[in-house]
Length: 637
Image 1 (tube, rainbow, N blue to C red):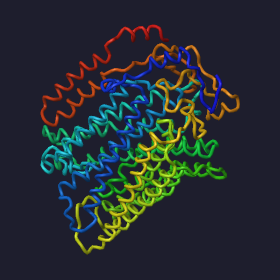
Image 2: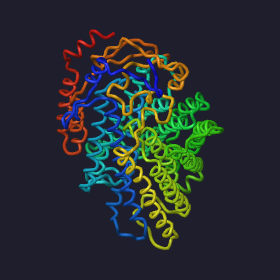
Image 3: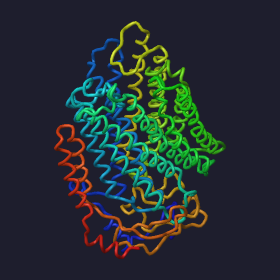
Image 4: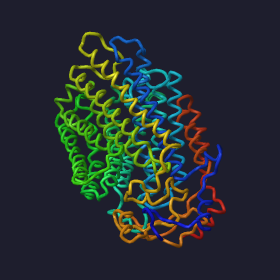
């Protein structure tokens, strides 16, 4: 197998044609609803995630228009509260986590040298759940029935007495439903990473992005169920009269414990994949192995563990015992250590090299600057006395935007520029890309850094207006004007995306001369990714291939069906072959049935009966044996 430009070169022979026919996705409008290939579903997650990012950004602009002047009447209080709540819900639930999962679903199988995810139909089901949940919540917003109690939905404000109407009911139903999507994506990513790696890709040879996605997936499996249970408990309080969070009969603080046990790890669920993206960009940009591979992996795992010990970080003013809060102060400060270890490893990798200062690398450097500021302010609010002073002020708003936008969105934009050639086969425009970076970088700091000052001057969060003469007027106007600059910076990237689809320079299969296996596939990848399964002989397989001039491959895997190679957990030694299902409409039908059950509960108790009854028939159809499935499993081993 000859290697040219670090890719597998395959003759367009009969076997390749057979693979193309077997792995193709049906064309047309109705065929779209049957697709199960990981590149199709991963791209849907990515595109939908960016659509929600634009929607959430538009809501933020409306908020800043309202807050630009004291006593401004651009929005009334109820509308502002709905927009404020939907902005947080969109960014945390419908943008940040799903888009990270989308990058994982698209890139990880390619990095692992396999042809698809472990459970392709489950993959498609997760996307349809995500799409239905997002559409439902935005329909509620356009109908004036969106939740208006923040993305955190604290009782007793969120109970039926203080928040009548459907808004919180939409929140509880949609969030519970939405987490199903996150969980199924996490489970299949774990299964894919553990069992579908290329032969020879032992755990200590996995790309750092794969490690990051693995840690993220385990965190989702642990963090999401408490949120689902909590939102169900709130729904029961509102609909059938239970008292989980009712003052006196129950405990409103219980909601905060359960919610933030999910909520603070979610910050790291978003952040950890971004760290993997940075590692991939740094390796390709410097053209050298990353410094401290083992230290970075252990730091990723440490963040995953320690991240679950920080939830009381958000509850210092709720009257908890001081002895208990001391533990969480220590944990909140300690988590800065593994994050710092990774930053120093990247700096060591850059030191003495000649990195390419392209747009993706600029976003990485922007991350260094912004995230360090966010980390320093995070250590400040980890202190109980300081947090008591700035809690629920704009200082906290500044802090978490520095952490979430600097720690996740900037690396995500860098990853978009880095992997865009793999997605489309074309390069993004570097001139426009660098302009978008500088607009976003300057606009971000001018928008959010002054919010530290507003917080220290006492401006509270979650207010829709403020009186004149408190010293906040000029700063708020400056912040609102700066937010327009930030919006233009991000919009320039999306203009670049669409412009480059048709007019971007052809990329070739590996324009960055990168090291990992996704760049051995065509750009964009064929439906089957790889004609033959590659064999990995080192941590940087494409660079290893330069020494020998070829990539070893596994032969004997059938090409007349969707067959994957299953390998052992630790050393990735071939164990068996598995036959994957093809295009199928049942994932969509099951998602619709589940939506009727989850979301219909808002309107009448009969809908869960109908929805879950239909789900039973959808599951039967999903698993109903077909002749070709039986033939595949009887012959596979």
